[in-house]
Length: 136
Ligand SMILES: [Fe+2]
Ligand SMILES: [Fe+2]
Picture (cartoon, rainbow, N blue to C red):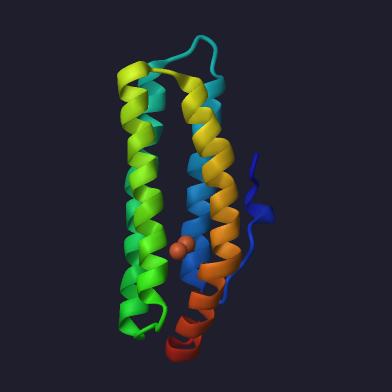
């Protein structure tokens, strides 16, 4: 499981805080998926928190990019949109099938790996640009 301490840090503090919150929610999801007896409602609850938080996470970065006219904003925003749509598809699959394995594989593997890569690449470059124009 992803730990907060292992998260790559970017140059704009507020973004790091949001990334840490996202990791906390992924950890919460892992506990909900591991509970015995299994409670569907708890997974539902964490998934909706995770979806709302991710939406805010991305919107916040997009607002910052707009404020400083970040040149690669469209590319970064496009990647956010792609992942958000993917996440929504997995959540609606979960609502239809209640299959925890698909949720586990997507959120704890695919999305977690994506998040690490995204922070190291697009978020890092974006944060440097924002910090340069706004101060960290
Ligand atoms: Fe981010
Ligand atoms: Fe991002």
